[in-house]
Length: 428
Image (spheres, rainbow, N blue to C red):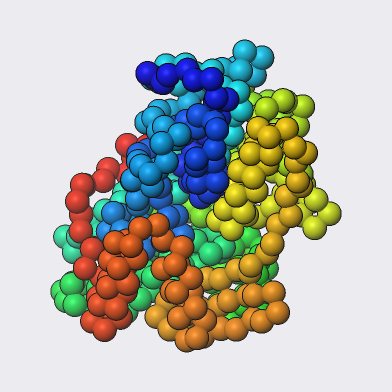
């Protein structure tokens, strides 16, 4: 890896997501050599991936070069690498570009799509956890409309224009709302010789309400917004299989659809060496204590989605969202600094700043600690929070300009098939 060995302790951070970057910034300028490893050379703002999928934004609007973030921190090095294994005893990691010894190791690899062992779904469904996956989904959806225009088989045409989204969390709800707006405002203009009224958007939830992690009021209002947009909301329905054409469920309800988007679950992106039952829970998240230290292992920590910190309030671990990751990264940065200074560690305390989701134009729901609201004002709050959270001034400006343009013109300029997508060959 061509990394010099200094007299300072070496801290290796695996992952440049919200948690990894927050941690790295806290360690900037400290008497330590910090090495960040990531399989991509950019940070992805995942909350806006659905807008890339639906043509609202280009991918460079929500991605930011990791080297640019870290360039002003001389004690931090970055390497583009895929970490393959951790040797806990030897304090060594193995990657596709070589091996590296560490004094302290932080795993901030985030999460990946969880198909719960269903191989058929994993093969045929579309995931949306990364920029490449979002671009694949965008190409597939646009290709479906092009194919629907060419076929004279009515059943095949309906299948191509039928979209099934599994999982009614924020990702599923926001994607369904965006697709409904495309159906209403864009498809009739782009495809005047296609009866776009036949487009069906089905949102399937295994539980009894959408946005189950939010308040009941937010769930009810979100469902109302979705139905007003023409989305078919299916509750208490569980998808059991998909062969690329037919979606089967645990009831006699089925859907003929050429596109199924899986937004029904995620799991921790653990690494070989720390992936046994001794270290991870059923959700493949690494078990950590109140200081984010991996249980039973010295000098290894985990933060963000991959970390499972159990408490009375969160018996299944903290929510797999950006805020817990950011807060854990900052706190661990302070704790590692205290370790270097031979001081005692401070336990992590999560400060819940609320949750929010947008369902489309002028429609959003926001749950704050002491205030819950929905509608137009919630939509403006959602936009401001996401603009502020984006990394880079350029990205904020580009996203803001795109949003203003899309709002005024009721358009999505990025509906481009940059690279044709062949569904059966899909792999991220």
